[in-house]
Amino acid sequence: MAREALTARAPDLAAKKLTVDDVASSDSWTPGSAALLSRMLENLVDNAIVHNHEGGWIRICTGHGGVEALLVVETGGRVLDQEQVDRLTQPFERLGADRTGSERGSGLGLSIVAAIVAAHDGRLDLLARPEGGLRAQVLLPAAGEDA
Image: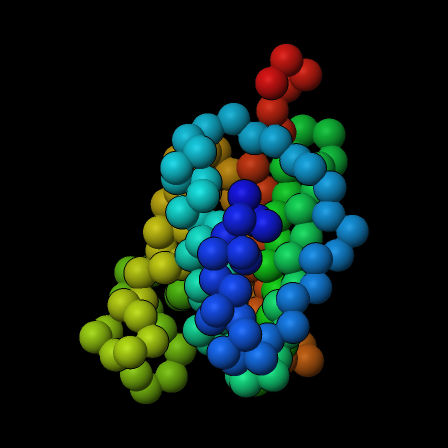
């Protein structure tokens, strides 16, 4: 699903001259709605593209560790305030002065991600990277052996 989300946005990635680093990812499986999990990935990738600077980078990693499936979408960029980042899962919350209705989205992307993660009994962590940019980490229950 992560590769599909990136492939679908190849023109947007190219237009901004973004480098994508798919680091040592491994397949990980989680039970749930394929449509909702796909939307979650699309929103995270869209966020990484829209809120990146031209010539920037995006790093995506998937993996699993026992009972959890892991997805990390990370970007470089300007240094962000963690207190503001903590509010980004609230509807219509955005960093900076622009508000809803701008060309940069509605401010719903990460609140939708948070709702999808919660509906799948997972956890979303948004972290301001000290060197700039954002790290979005999703932990979901891993699928059982029979999945």
